[in-house]
Image 1 (tube, rainbow, N blue to C red):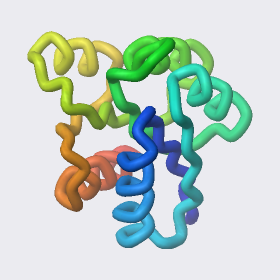
Image 2 (image 1 turned 90 degrees about the vertical axis):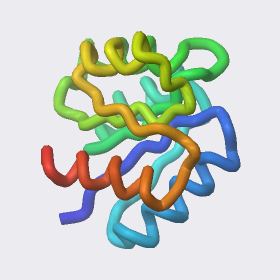
Image 3 (image 1 turned 30 degrees about the vertical axis):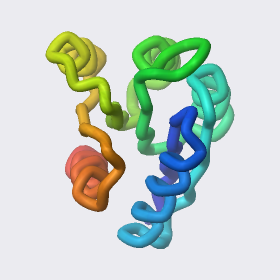
Image 4 (image 1 turned 180 degrees about the vertical axis):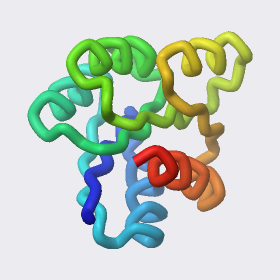
Amino acid sequence: MAHTLLIVDDSAVSRMMIRAKTAQMQPDWVILEAANGAEAVDLVRSKSPDFITMDVNMPGINGFEAVTQIRAFNDSARIAMLTANIQESSRQRAAGLQVTFVQKPVTLAAIRQAIDYFLASS
C-alpha cells in the first residue's frame, strides 16, 4: 500500500534531502512538501497524508503550533518532529503531542528512524 508523506521544513535543502532519502527507501510513497506550518496545516486538511516530518523552528507558526492545529482535525497522522532543537523541553512537548522526536542533521539514519516509527505505527 502506498503511503503519503508530508515533509514540512522552511529549508528547501532539508526538504530535498528528506525527499531523496525517503524515496530511496520507500520508492512507492507519494511525497508532498510544505515550506511552513500554515502551508502544512492546509495540506493536511486537503490531502490527509499518513505521515508527516515536521521541523520545529519555522517562520510564522512553528512546528509545535502546526502539530497542535493538525491534531485538532486529524489525530491519525503519524508525525515525527525532525529538528535540530534538542532541548529536553522540546522533547517533552513533542511527547505531549504524541509525536516522535528525530534529531537533525538529515542523515539516512535519521530518516530511517522516522520511517521505522511511521511503519511500526501504521
